[in-house]
Length: 338
Image (tube, rainbow, N blue to C red; front, side):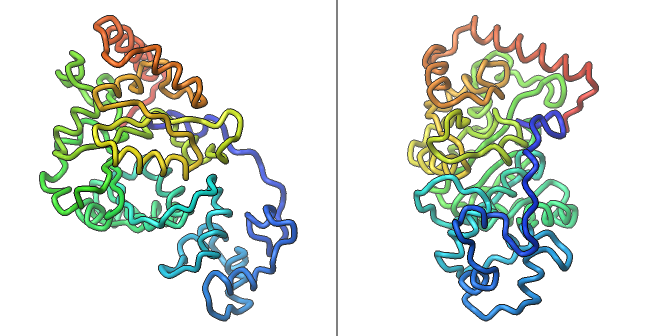
């Protein structure tokens, strides 16, 4: 879900760090020296000048520099330290993945920031070409590419996060070379008044939003990341077991792909809740009570169960009306969606 404000809940101010203390050093009882850390990370001698650049004394901030300079052959300790710095929130070992993100808006950029910080190789694309994504590259640490290249390099995971109305405009063979077992994530939401215009199948409720996307892409998709603000996605992941940990519903007709994505949700710091098939994913669409509500897992499971699996005409009418009121309120505030 695209954020409608610059920040709904800005992250708390951190305490001042020492001049050469990495952001994650507070997690160690006695933090090792920066040279020791960098030597372990890069597996080669490190100069004081390079250590100084890491600490942000020579230009770019330490976090962004550290993320962009990761080695493709990084040691296990390097990956561990990077994940601790980035706020990895599970003790389960996660493999490093090649991820293609098609769409560089709020959600796409938030995912790129988090995924690169966790050590994944991320390739991000928009409709205007990689030359327009220099700022996104600097912000996220992802590599700007074309949509075709994002699909080609995203051998472990593809995220399609573009306006719903633009789905039919994607190249017809965009995913042809993507391995069949690679999960395709769809984050889209239907905003007929502010952006997408009316889509008959979604107006009548004969299809859910992601069923419609799946038909156009010609590949099974996994519905997730559509009902959380981008700011929350980037900044509110916490360790597993933390009280009030935000949960995200995940729906798909492909059970294997769904499980892979649910593991990724956990790695990002959220509880993954199974929302059934794509036909049942109406329960996480705009206008429903869980949309943007940041519910913990027990409450989300209870809510999804209370709705049932088959959408009734009354439910469709109710949630459609809810969403129309939200869109009108956004329009009254001058909010425009691209």
